[in-house]
Length: 474
Image 1 (cartoon, one colour):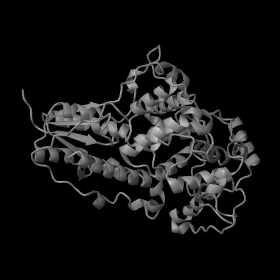
Image 2 (image 1 turned 30 degrees about the horizontal axis):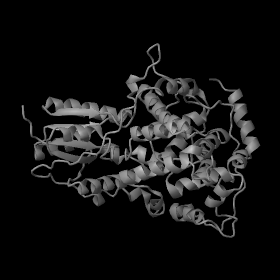
Image 3 (image 1 turned 180 degrees about the vertical axis):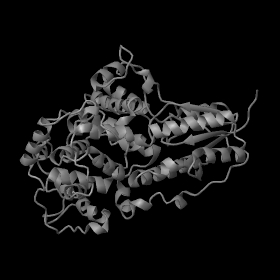
Image 4 (image 1 turned 45 degrees about the horizontal axis):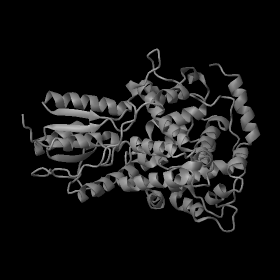
């Protein structure tokens, strides 16, 4: 059977051409390839920063495809199935390929879509690539899933990870291209408002930039990564979470770069590999226990008396970076200016919200989802539950990070705090001033405002948290 009908490649969170299993498989058939991106209901419901960053990524992918002599067809509609069926009718496509995702909403959509298309006689194939290890392939000796990270790491660290695929030499074009929307008309930047212009210089956009970022990290940073990754003022991390979240680089490419560094004797490489597997662990937990996204992973924590008022004065101060605690405020402002936050800062602000303020972790999770350009459903949920104490591998409930001592330990010269906090400084850093250009106008904040006193004394907040934990009924 000599099938010459086109294949639709449905791009989602795999915005690259290299190491792309679905794209490679389609090109190897010799059939025409039609790359598509569907702005469906799941894309529409994305929060401000993730939607804006996705829009940038889609635009970069379109440019990359154009340089290869191909096109990215854009379609918008509430139902992805309807849009793909229209494209099949218009193009005569006989197959649809995509890369698998693992959050429950996407899995439900893809399962229904695959069944409907197969009923219509369409060849539908899904491929790996967003993860190194498919969640159903990693099991304990008794056949269950891993609930603790270290045994998970010990299981997978010696496994073979597929070598990255190259970039297809060419994508065969169809005789006639279907019509396409224009990206600008989608207004994926609308909810970012004036913040988009502030965050944009910090974005490393597209596949080429992601590869350059990985190369810089391996060449210049990974040797000392184990130590520098905790110093928020240093250029001491890979910063690849932004690109991994949208698949502008694959975890396989990162893993093999890390393995080469390890074999070359670069001491921090193993820590980097462990961080890649920590990301995998989050996805495996989301696959096996999807409640991690919106419910306490440890079900006995359902009885914990979280404060759940997202509009409470203390919560508003936390969101605005006005808690009066420099490490917390600096990290929250970094989030607003760059769209990302240093990992040490993420732990500190999450611990502060859930323990010093005894606020439901889901309020923090939602705020991060609104603001992060590297938002990832599995990592965001697991990180918040880890900090709150309700999740897997959780920090013990009695461990309450002290932001003051953490600042002394990891930012002794106050370089991080000074970069992000303008109030009370004669010559604030430009990044600290940019925060006031990014925030909503109705917040009414100015650089010459006085810096606030702590909304909660750190010792008092810690004692209050421990008292609640010790008297818990769960």
